Amino acid sequence: MENTQGARNGTAMSRRGFLRGTATALPLAYAARGGPLWAGGEDRPSPPDNDAAYPGVIVRQSKPENYEFPFPTLNSFTTPNNLFYVRTHFGIYKGVDPRTWRLTVEGHVERPLELRYDDLLKMPSRTQVALLECSGNGRVFLVPKAEGVPWELGAVSNAQWTGVPLAAVLDRAGLKSGAMEVVCEGADAGVLPGNHEEPKSPGQVHFARSLPSEKARQPEVLLAYKMNGADLPAAHGFPVRLLVPGWYGMASVKWLHRVVVTDRPFRGFFQTMMYSYFERRDGLPTLVPTTELQVKAEIARPARQEVIRAGTAYRVHGAAWTGDSEVTKVEVSTDGGKTWAEAKLLDKPLRYAWRRWEYSWQAPTKAGPHTLMVRATDARGRVQPPKRDPDRRNALVNHVLPVEVEVH
Image (spheres, one colour):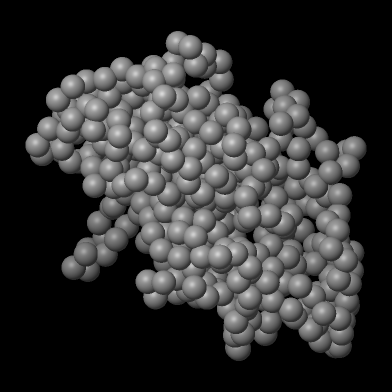
């Protein structure tokens, strides 16, 4: 059962007084379930080890590091590196020396390879704008409470990535006939303790995910070494990460150090036990890996329980995204879903990136609570669903999430 009442059900602390009227400045801080959001100010706590590279993020977990982009601050097409959300399973893998780093390509290939960082830099590169979203983004709004990192709205960000197409490296290695999947393994490893929803790992495991060979050879799938024009930060996979546009973030393996081509399906821990959901086939629930992004729109402002001055114009805005397609329409409801009006799309359609949107709302003159909603449609005709699909376990949260505000 999904939470359709936001703050009524306790998913966020009241922000009455958070902002009044139509002022555009954010407050210094507000409390949100799962951890504090800080937009500045002297009282902002530092992330682990006083890492000044992460001002303003929401610390959802400190060990391992899981930091959320403060979605209400959305004001640009690309997300600055120091605000881009961070997802780790075993902590940020540090201390990689690009001079000694190696990427091995092995398995069902004609010519096993070992590439140095300089080898990649010498290869023809490609720059790709792409959004990444954790499959658990929005988990905090699920009822009953779901296990996992308590993401609210900001386990999603948009950036420009530069790197070498994975296909170019696979071509160097030469895929043997019958090559089925390409397994990408990160250098990060550890033991996951498990909980009542997710099993314990079989001892120490590396984070690894696979792609079908057809997907791995798409030109937009990159071995990325730059992010928004700068070298990858450690938190985002330095020196090299996989980038899989259009798929949830778990596919974009960080701290990449090994590629294994297989002639059979990969059934690794993060491919089956985690990052998977149930799909109904012939009426039978079948476990399948999480892959493509679902169509989704989120409201950045107003925030939940924000106070809005009665009788004034308010700029409702946010972002929308989808998988291997483009967002073509965003609709806003200011009466709890009874009626819908089309929002203005602010960005040009760009596959794999989000599109920001805005809608001018004339707040009613009568004081009281009001429920705002948003939904997106993509070029494939997929429409953001109104209700939660329980077969999605504790992730793939793309149903419409109402935002209750107070008109005062």
